[in-house]
Image 1 (cartoon, helix red, strand yellow):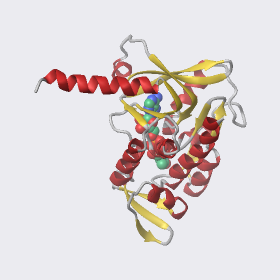
Image 2 (tube, rainbow, N blue to C red; image 1 turned 90 degrees about the vertical axis):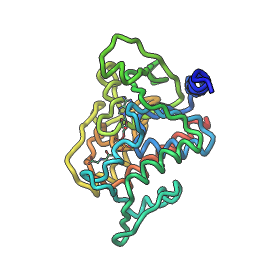
Image 3 (cartoon, rainbow, N blue to C red; image 1 turned 180 degrees about the horizontal axis):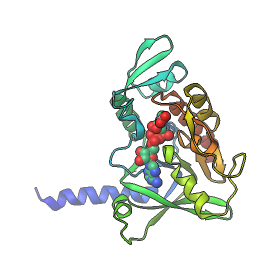
Image 4 (spheres, rainbow, N blue to C red; image 1 turned 45 degrees about the vertical axis):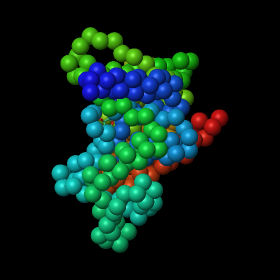
Length: 257
Ligand code: 48H
């Protein structure tokens, strides 16, 4: 056994995956629940999907459950998505299910990977490619470069569609709006900011506001609240799953054109 054979296997396979991601159909920025659901559903239809996640582990806000208590809640309307990804649940009250957050995070991650989604962790999106009024790709860097503020230039990836699935931070749209004189597809043309907790309305709005916010960029999950002025909902996750499902349907149309 030679150690460099191990190294060769890692570098070669990583570079193959990275090459495959240079021109994706869909790039999803953020590996939280909404992004992972969309990624898995698109990949199972043959779409070439890349997910970029800046943390070590994808899963976003799932892992911590509610205040560190490890369950999250999913309402009946979204249970079909749990079943689709073979994630166990427990009905604790009529129409409400408790889901082990570890099972949900790991189930969605593996569900995406086994359907062919190319997930890169430790990669942060720091800027966008914009050509003729349309977002055509992302500018990426290693997250340690960003954390240490090293002067290391980034690389780029292209896609037919870019998704802001970055959660509360709405990092992609915030960057788009900060660096460019653009009018977003929102009532004011700008981001509206997230509002305080109101679970029922929040869950409805997160799905309603899953849409194309600027040519070439879609928002899903919690970033819709920051962009469209929705409420937060606390540790109920059905809206995130349904937002991912709606997004996948929209992008399937885009990719088949
Ligand atoms: C690469 C990035 C970047 C970047 C961020 O927050 P998430 O879990 O996202 P959602 O919207 O799918 O789910 C939201 C849910 O987890 C939640 O927070 C809820 C329900 N809150 C309710 C409440 O009341 O608070 O995941 C987003 C992911 C994270 O893993 C980030 O690390 C990642 O995106 N990310 N990845 N480049 N620039 N910015």
